[in-house]
Image (cartoon, rainbow, N blue to C red; front, side, top):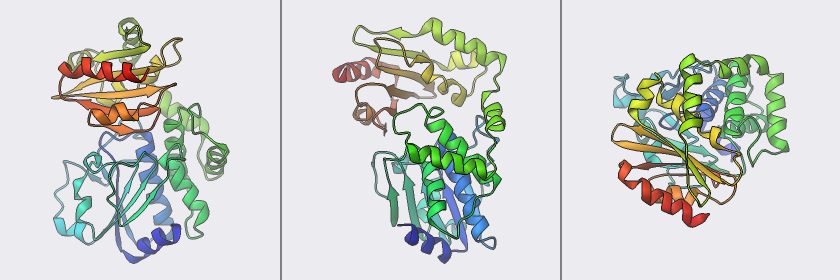
Length: 313
């Protein structure tokens, strides 16, 4: 697999690395980590990260081609190799120009939904896509990590494992994290960048604990409307980051936050018990067995979503 990926990378002068909509730390970690190891191996190549910006992990980097701001001609994409990371289905790829690439590589750790790569490396045993990129760097002698890539990948591993707390964390996870520390990732520096909070965010956390809803079947959730986000001056990303404030509450094995996002209601669904990915699949989503995302067309679908969760509890 790695030889095949390396062969494709060597073949193209222009390589564009894609991620998913509303990128999280793992998406950025995989994208910027991959850009780092390719550029270190082949400094003469043009390697770009494309997608949406993320305030939460902006310290990792800023996309070279920002979705919605780029006026690049289609020919720019047509002459390139597209590498899509951390994305299980086509519709979630933030820049749909990936389809214009001459060839496509898919690297992902989610439960497979769509097949869209000429080369696909999908392995659900990895708790983060950033860890996949770090591991690949140890298997391909041409790839070398420098500090920017180490910071990106360590951040990706940290965020998608809940700081090494989630199921799926393995000996290899810690080996890769340790290796990234030797390449320049600074634990204190990264923790400080991820832990800084505004007063509005602190007040919002108080709101979370005062306004969650519980059901008698063991489901706990929070509704966040656009009005609430505006009241606390929160980005969508900041609002969604509180999902695990509802974890670890005795008697509630499944929890979620519902975030109004224009015409849709986005869902971040988590579990410490039953598998929840099939529930997410019923509502325009998917993901991992214990951590998934979904989307409701309106608040009117909330009751149906709760019923679907109750069916697995």
